[in-house]
Image (cartoon, rainbow, N blue to C red; front, side, top):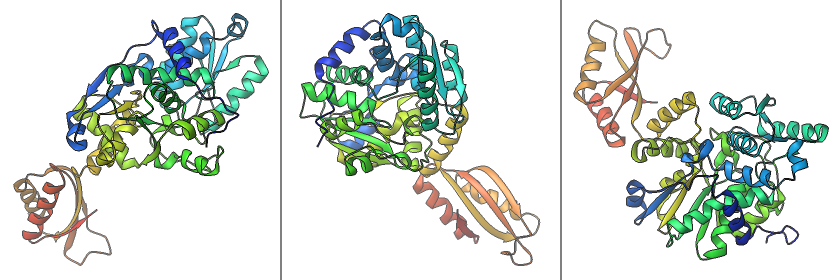
Length: 407
């Protein structure tokens, strides 16, 4: 049960935030995904908040919160902590509203997010390995300087602002049956659930967390926020150690289910969005899509999956695409034993070419204790057309007389 002492954001609160944001945020598009619809068996739409100003939904909550400060409060400036998206939202909102912003970011924050936040006019301070330490530093700064802390999710105004995504979904897809939303601290899913349930209590709202940073299940079980002792996920935008009383109350009272997705699910979904939807999305932003791909039969259509952000580090994007290719069975790593004589490697490569596999990497190993005298081990990384083709490639090599081991 939701904590009765924590008032929930109402539909009217979200409507008021929508009026406030009318000329500030973009009314982001809802794009149909045929690739997901074929899997689900009915319409699936992507709510493209990666196309929002600052590249994520965060401007909605940040602007709502800062705009409702008094003139005296804004004159003292605002401070925030963020891995990147909330930072950019606060920086732009502060600039639009004429106040200064200081943002504490983890040392691991992606460089493009740091650069973008600075470009919006905020002062950046790096410190601490995770968002938890950055939040503590921001709170200390607020206490010491009198700046107003703009928390990424622990305030009703922030939740109401994020909830305007839900209002747009209802306007754009009036017959929606299921809404999936990524969740870190829970501000977005809390707001979306408040908006959706106020008009359509029959709609199922699902929160999706990264398996390596899933704080909601334990907190829900305990009935209070329970911090995770450690987190490990590529989805930095939802790597939050704990919800707060506010967001946990909303999830308890309004969200129908919390699901988790693996790193493989996230990388596969990111690759899907790039190839099939032509959308550049960060790992956190693709969590809802990952849940649909992982278990498409679990969601009654029409489905809306919120694509929450697109601020991805190009270096990470390259790694995730490679990971996604491997998860989709399109990268194949093999070890083969062949006789150590002229022409052996050429024979392996000819067999791979005949099987239609594209060779990406080749390594020779002659000194391993695993090898018999007179043998050499060849390690190859191949690009295939998918799992069936990968199986065919292994079969072709085996038929050609090679001892093959899949990595």
